[in-house]
Image (cartoon, rainbow, N blue to C red; front, top):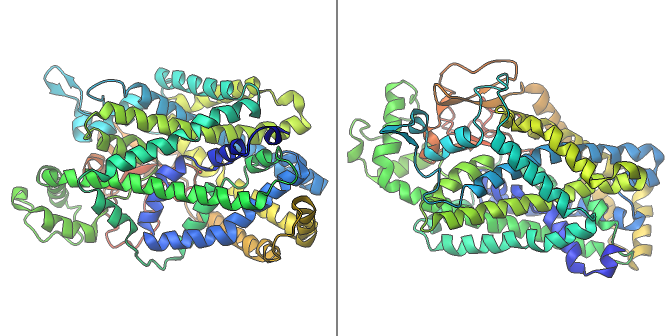
Length: 587
């Protein structure tokens, strides 16, 4: 088999490369910050131990023992369960369609990083006149919405294809296709670079970040334990564990099917899971060291940015809650300590995630670093490699079961070409809205249902004791009987609870997405069937993104998530999921 003839390192690179993805960098730090800091970390580790690792071990063991892809594994257990494998394949394909668009965006930013100054460092000018849309928002927001996406005002306004993103998407699919031209044998070779390089970049960013002013304060603010008894914190932690490990995609089963029978997959489950967790911690340190530096720099801009924005909102009648105890009419007289004390009680500083972190907040912070093009190129090359490793695993989750059952369909070039052609949907000017909608609804519910059926099938239909007998015959020793009870009760009930919570949220909330209105320079939430919203209290200027006030766009169940502006309508955090006017959603 593949890994018997190669080294165990290649197998680890494949599994770690798939499980460690963009969510570790732009999702985990936000969740940790928003849900209790150090307290969230303890909850995450607890759920990883009692739910994540047992389910990860189940998929590893099933693939290694039966030695087939997801369709073959579940059909082997019972012909009636083949639908679980088919569902995994379909979800993998949907995720691959829009996930590669994110790689295309990263390629676009990478290509634009080799110039000084960076194109998102300052607003463009036409003669002596500054671009109004940029002046009303920020250089990074303008470059993202207008230069990169050239976004329309709503999903109903399709617009033409974005030629730059079409070219980048073609390049992204070409890289994926070339990386897998000999199947898994070639993809694991690529992973020697794509799986290791992100760690090199993260360490470099951490060392550089710790040398910046404000880094220590950012990290301290990140990890300071805050007890948040809200039940939603449990749901968010469980969801993050679920998607961080890549459960339900079929990729774990596919990779483990190449292992020798006596491979210690039990140890692998713990090793890969903790590497994933430690990677999230490393990324969190990097993100908040750099964003702490960004907040530190805002010290000198408080008067001319933050307070002028507060003054505008106050005069517009929008700042009706807990007004600041200082005179907004003379912002120059307000000190940083007074502003910071008020804002820490009634505002958000570092709450940013998803594309908002990667393409707006972090890019703006990097413009402040000496040699900014170098750091920018390094950052987006890291994102590209993180995404590629995950894409290789996702594609293997599609191709491995097809090779077992439908060899004629398991052609790498054909699948990549189909992915590119269908993915053109996301390269239209309204494509970002479709990415958001796909991310929210194409993977969440199906993947949770898949894992529910996986757990039920092994622990109840096939029998947990019988499965442990198979593990004993395969490994030469019997795993703890504790797994029997974890699979039959704890994991199954946890996944059913997550399924119920996700279903209720989807049924109770109208599907919406965040739109960007070019004329008003406002972002707002709207359902797909309606046009841009009128300018109101919930349509806030993206000027807030320039002052460091970020909020979540999607809820917490998606493989990738977006961002929006500060939610001034919920100062007391009575809406812990930030759902007022935002997208319902689901690595």
